[in-house]
Length: 240
Length: 240
DNA sequence: ACCTGAACACCGTTCAAGT
DNA sequence: ACCTGAACACCGTTCAAGT
Image 1 (cartoon, chains in turn yellow, orange, blue, purple):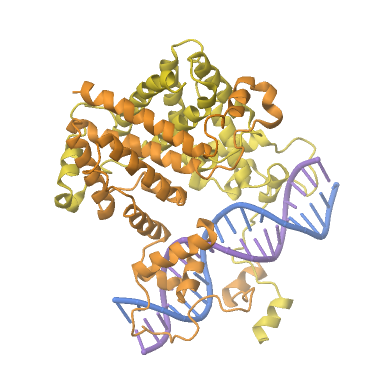
Image 2 (cartoon, rainbow over the protein chains, first blue to last red):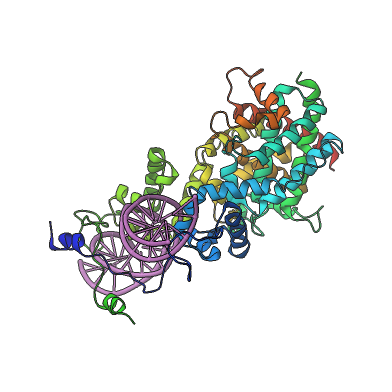
């Protein structure tokens, strides 16, 4: 045991900054009278923060500052940061447009649902790794969306034992496509390696030939969705 | 300026733990004679670490410990942790099986490539948000894979100006499906909310009716891939 | 050129003290 | 029940000192 060791046992390291790090400015220490904090205020503040500075700006400290509370106060309402992400996910799912199921043809309904779903999560891709693995049990709004889609597919004539697979497969395509929306311009530009990949280079050069002013991610999503739905139309009648 | 403030200017906070935090045990301070570190050693150590304790175990500190160097030594070979993730991505891409292009029929080749691609990244989903947005310019192995796939699709008769879209769409489905592989059992079990979603509940109950001992993620991937390829077969001839 | 040691500015989370 | 203040155990990154 060195001298430095025993020192740490008796003296605390002084704070590196002198500024206050936690807490609301004026509020006394005890329990406040009004409802200072709750889950939906945390959700709203999170979306504000994300809109301002992205998911990288969504920290417990920033959230506490926005809500004018101490960081530790957040833990009276959520168990963890993951818990907050789950709140965001549930809120976003309810913004996905499922209204076409029941009004439009099943194939049109799928396409409109998928487009809406992708657009909602394109701005929230950091949630995707979470959703894809999140049990629906505690997520009523997510469940409500699945109920709508299932009903639409049942009425379209899909066999009961294939519907979950159809939904999972479509969601996979939707989530993957949401990432693509955020790809930088020229992501496929081979640069100085062009000579090593002549076919791909040529094909990238033809990217915008037929889609003048559409984003590459949108073109790919449209083509993929069309192909997917065409294939489903065939399989629907075959797979029984 | 308080007393605590001026204190920090003159005395360093003592370390909270007594154990050494950085550095290799025996090595002297200066530049070592042998090649202690390089990019491929960092890559290999990263995969070892991931295999042992997942991506959450992949930290600069753990990496340095594994390689028996100081954390700061890593920055002589990579610019950042993101840089390491890019090394991993390039290495994994080269494990994707593209051998079916050129030997099998185009639709079979796509299916085998897609399955291999999904399987490789199912164990490395934290890389997916990165890949989907990563320019190919500095990634020769990624480019080599695209060259193979492009060639296969060109020979299959797809129009030059659609091939990038076809690849992007397929990749979206592949990446999304990779996440599903890691979903927990019973992810679709509605729990106590079953009554609110009767159709979905019924459809989930029928999930395993026709696929006795296959994982749900595999069933969905197979069905989605089949639908996708069928749709592509139609669009290939139409879209010209 | 390439390493060590030490620090820096964060991060999410915990917990006693307070009302 | 629900807040504050203070700490804890990390994290990735920087940089002077050394050879």
